[in-house]
Length: 355
Image (cartoon, rainbow, N blue to C red; front, side, top):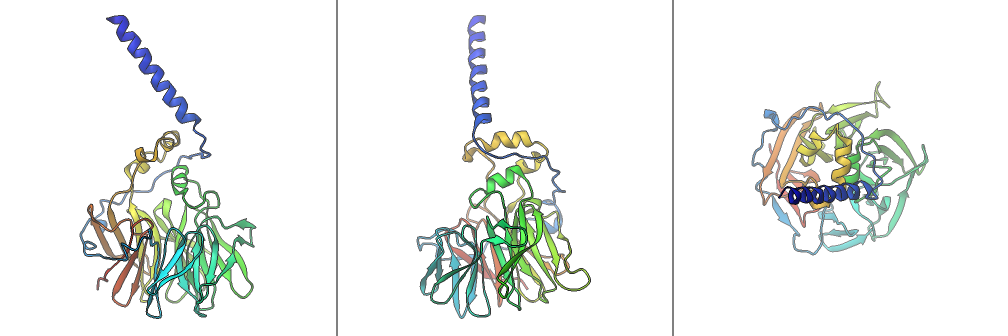
């Protein structure tokens, strides 16, 4: 009997040894680092869970396309970009970037400017013709690897983010588990046709939005739960500071309603495993080698915050349920309506904006 138990123990030890060797030998070029997660604010009263987003109406859900990451209204038409590169508007297919369109905005000439994660910063005229504006930062000679979001100033300059100079689109999970600062905030000048890096060393640079007076521009740092402010005018021009930190979730896109409110889409609330393993890089390296279904997963939780231009929370909109419209990755206000986009949901949504 004792011999049988010893044999079983040896087999069990051998099994786990093989598993560990397999996990360690998995050819993933990622080198997680130890970091200190900022204070978890999920239980702060200002971020208390509510059902204010339970009434989101969903549109174009059955059109055969997936992942309407960003929504934009122009000339009475709705424009949406999908994961297969298709740009669709109210009339039908408008164009196809052959990449992954993320943030979008129209310039003064009526061209649709797109932050395409694969193709770079591009422009599409009203005939659907595509023109590449930038694929590299001229100031530091670093190629654009993961263009994410943008906003356009009144002088035509395009402020945009490059989420990571190391990992491309589809490798977000590697960026999350490694946790190294590979993101940038940049500006493209249509007059000189040059691209300049304004901020580097950002932890997954994501949403970008100008203030109503264009004195500063915001850029979300998704993996540090914060938003940076970069000053464009005044005594602080050319410097940056924290706009808001210790957010209760992963900030994705941000937009201005031009009336003093920034709308921030939170991809998901913070994740317990990410919090717990921040100072355990080896554990993250092991878990990353597991099948993706066994790794930490997002939950069905709609989450949007409204911030004033001083970085104070004035609106907390949520809904946690199986049927929640989630993840919300972009939110924009047109008149009294909030429009929502999602990186993975089939369909865009809208709801009346809070007063």
